[in-house]
Image (cartoon, rainbow, N blue to C red; front, top):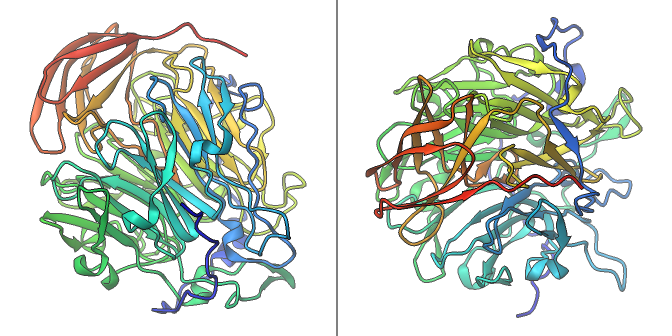
Length: 580
């Protein structure tokens, strides 16, 4: 079919104004003049090594900046780690932005890129991304088997028409956006595939940022220097979108029917989860300089927006922060799903601890209230990088206002890595960002997964107007581990399933959750660090249907396949690591 055209940049329109918010970029400049000492891990041993080029990833992000400050240029883009060809390892899909101007005669927009894992953590670039070489001004990516045929499909958000790519089972893609009804022309950002109505297929939610066009772009300055305008200057927040899977390859737009037009903001981050414990998947949206949304699923596609009531709309002081990326996990090991939202320089992270019927802002209890204020954070990953059984935290940073503090990239900042400790707090790992290499770009999307299947979780980072990072796990005293590929009867990843197990004397809960971070999609396999334990015990899966299935005990060191209703497992032991 003919390729879809670039966005009609004059077709966006204003819907709603939100006055009275403090300017995003002013906050970024103000920051904090002094910061308390940041607790650090004293080992000074690198946890990661940057190996993008040696592993075959040559992607370089482009904003298309040409002198005029167009707001989408500052946002950057995301990436996905997923097994697109079904061979048991993670491939990499990176979203390109390109240019917001009409391309010069004879030149095409740069395209998104797909890299195929060769089985040892090294990649080859797929020609034309095997059909998924979308050329819109790219933002985010969500992955999931929306047609229940056993392979992973791709949804890409753009400034302009979004794109849905159907996988043919061989890792080749067909653009079915128009047929499926998913070519929404807004400014799409984060997206999630999740079964919201319990009919065993994946529905789709995606955030929209603002109603924007090149024609209506504004001019803003800091100390007389041109810069990007904060979103509230446009007074044009956009309604998010919710699409119901019809089971026949098409989707129905349910956004107005469920009431998304009654409460919305400048959406950047999206995660799903059963946040109220009623057995249904809910949706959390992190908004930029506006109150967040929490859409609680009452069943039958009925939702109530209860962010303010439940304590996740604003921080403990009643401030609507510049929500960028969001991660969700059972951070405190009490069996329910918590939220961590990252924000602008001068604003702390927001750790919303799930207390059952409400959330408490417990950022200070994690030790993040002061250290997280130093940078502007985008990508955010909660994962057990050292396999000690506790979640660690990686944050990808980059300013929105110019600075000469770090490198010739005026918006560059170092990324940071925090180690989870036995007392429930995080301490910063040095060297900065967990690498001995000096890696300072303006980072955005950050995806997590075990690229070489050696049991250590790796990272794929997209840098605005820069090369991507492939951060390979090199923790010197890596604990034991086991991971689970959790599959529904249909053969697809069981998005939203909870896996609970005993590690030593601790009960740990992890979730099948590809979405999260910032504009990204992550390894759907569920990873457990075991520390010195040689076995994981009492493995139990709560399926998205609400039913629970017990699978028993497993030895460390491999990937175990758990299939719904069969009580059977298949195990693949870890290969020997390869260092290029």
